[in-house]
Image (tube, rainbow, N blue to C red):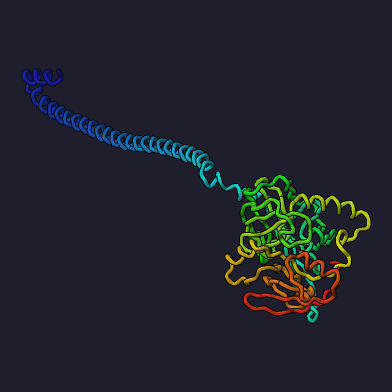
Length: 421
């Protein structure tokens, strides 16, 4: 409108024409300036919008990345939880399945051994060397705790040697023991140590045993501590006379491996009860144990006798001399079985076999060894251990005919009186 008015004025007046040209030029300049300002404003707005859009885009990209990562972490956590749950469930299943595996179902012998091993002890007899005066072990055996206050049951022949008695528990703790009760007739003895709250191995009823039952022989054979062997009851009641023993008591026969050092250790049933005391080995697969019923009688009797005067040789003949061996009568059946198991076993028809020689005994000094067969003494044939025991009552010196593998010879043995441990 302003431009139209100026143009109209210029047409009417020369001055107006001059002024109009100047004014229009000014207006034109101002218009261009305004247009440029507007363009500059639009340019700044565009740049601002562009920068804002770029910033928003970057922010959105980061936000989107964050959301995706968060979702990924949630997903991973869920997977991890699922994995953990699966592992726990799998573990539960594996434990349940493991309980049904043959190893778990039929490891009853290991369960019994694990429960009873803490009551078995190692017994060592120590004496001083005559020259060096140093303590040296002269024999060893096994035993087991029957009372928590430190009472240990073992074989009499394990502690028959003169010397200090050292008892080592399962955890390795050593105590000096005192022989409290000792009976050569039953071949049982008790040793007392100064300790309390010891794990006790209960004594079962051997009268209820049956042939074929599983048993575990525990002890320290050949000084190998904490050794366990398993077998079955071969005979629940083997008479002493069948073994060449003058005792009337019966014995438990087992095929569980028993060696030197097992003596005095427990023969354990599947209930974790000691139903026998390992006593002697004849050959591989034939070993014998004293029934627990006899051990219970011995403990009850000695408990009463301990409070008064007690003779450790009560029940045995005081006039009987000491030979220092344990024997097995060789019946035709036993001879045949021993010859089948050992080709070097001598070809004899009668006699007794020496299965143990006591250290420093008359037999030991004379040179008698484990496995020797005695067929005659002082010119008389020997058919059972009873024949030898009868001679111990009347003779001072024995001229013993020995068969050792394929060799035969005579040894003279000077008998001696029994000596208290």
